Image (cartoon, rainbow, N blue to C red; front, side):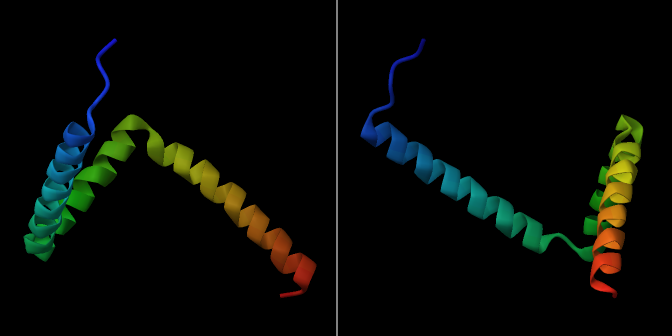
Length: 76
């Protein structure tokens, strides 16, 4: 196993993490809308290739049935 971090090392790590997080936020804010749409489309394609869309559909059906039961119970 590795050695424990010192307080100084931990603070340096947190500082680097915050710096990278801020850089990523700036990068995302600078991304034009068409770039964001391309990224979203790529994520959706990945989900489909990995079969996650079928899992999500099944989960959606469960949620829809729950909402239907709630609407029926409350007469909505």
